[in-house]
Image (cartoon, rainbow, N blue to C red):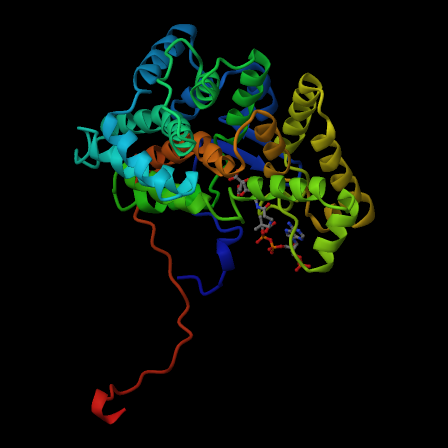
Length: 383
Ligand SMILES: CC(=O)SCCNC(=O)CCNC(=O)[C@H](O)C(C)(C)COP(=O)(O)OP(=O)(O)OC[C@H]1O[C@@H](n2cnc3c(N)ncnc32)[C@H](O)[C@@H]1OP(=O)(O)O
Ligand SMILES: O=C([O-])CC(=O)C(=O)O
């Protein structure tokens, strides 16, 4: 046993994976060997989903079968809608409603309770979760706004169908394409906190529903998936307040707070996903003829880079810095941003659990004990 303590498991190798590879110094990300830039530009999110769950990109026939299967699984039963109504009425956050809905999806799946080593049953559960997450989230948002959920459409891709179910109207093709790219960019990212959580749960041979429930919970925090909402809240505060973006960020730094959407455990340079999202935000801003969110973000990045010098400390924009403004311009409510991240990341969680369980070893690290020395028990009447 090693006695070296690695706080936060920083830099510790705990598993092998063929899903995604990150070069933190070069700022590069690959899914199964393909650069993220090419996948975002050339492939649909469904192709990426297939790639992460299988060993390679699908042929046209494989993709058609896979898409048909996923599209057929989109609808949810009335019991889920009743649960979502209950959660909406109690003012639950979307990410928490999503977490609760995984338990209900499990209750409604006949495969739940199957042999934990049955990988085909696990794949089936994974497909159902990723197919139903967009339906659950769109329905939850509509219910809390007093609207009827919109039934999923099988003739639309996953990204376009989500926007359709959320807004009740078919999205502009450019909006759907940009959202599809955002989903691709969030689909997997090595052993990040939520994926590792899913793997820890999966390593006990708990089923995919249990692994995903825990992963949603892990993603919800502001140090992980919650940062995209924090960035947009900051932009709104700048927009509504008297300070310029640069003045606002100076105040935040002076108060000793961290900049949301900046810094990363693995990247020492700009996250490659931030670069793609910045250019997609530009494309969207040109379409909506509203560039001011992009301008705030670029002013902030210029100031934090040139004046504050954060990149010299290895702190640079991460995936959450530019994504929030895209979602906002697509008409997605702020508190849904982290849940949308979960909707896409379910792909990575499930892929990693399936991969890990295929060659399973219970994950169980050790902690260094720093409590009192051995001592005699004192009965309560003598304390
Ligand atoms: C999808 C994702 O999960 S991406 C990350 C999303 N989270 C955020 O954007 C929240 C803001 N960022 C952070 O809190 C951090 O960068 C984390 C949690 C993501 C990574 O943190 P760690 O790898 O543990 O780095 P650590 O906390 O040790 O920070 C290292 C140094 O960089 C600084 N730093 C890190 N992030 C930031 C930031 N956002 N703003 C200002 N300084 C920062 C720290 O103050 C520290 O400086 P010091 O050595 O002078 O004390
Ligand atoms: O990798 C990480 O630690 C966080 C991250 O960027 C992600 O999960 O996409």
